[in-house]
Image (cartoon, rainbow, N blue to C red; front, side, top):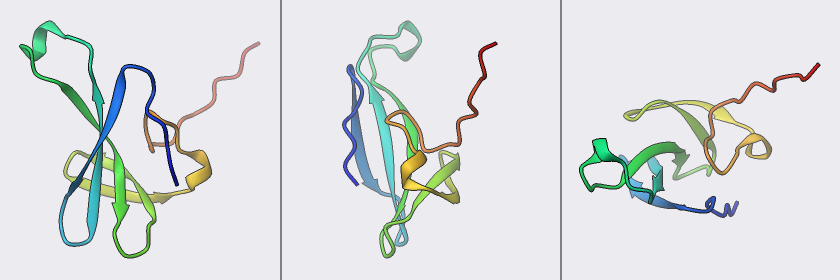
Length: 85
C-alpha cells in the first residue's frame, strides 16, 4: 500500500517495537505553540509481520486492524460520514 502525503505534509516511519512500525504524519506549517518544531501526529501502526494496519488508540498504543480501503492520507482512525440534508 502506497499513500501520498497531503500537500504540506509528509510521513515519517519509525520502529515502534519488535512487532510494529509507527507512521507519523508530519505537518510542515509553522505553529506558534510548537516553538519552531515540526508538528506530528500518529497516522497509524503497521504490523511488521502481517502488514496489517492498526488505528492508534493513542501515540503509544496500536488499536484494532483497519481495512486498507478505508484509510485516508490523514489518519487510519475510522471516520464517520456526515450526511448532508
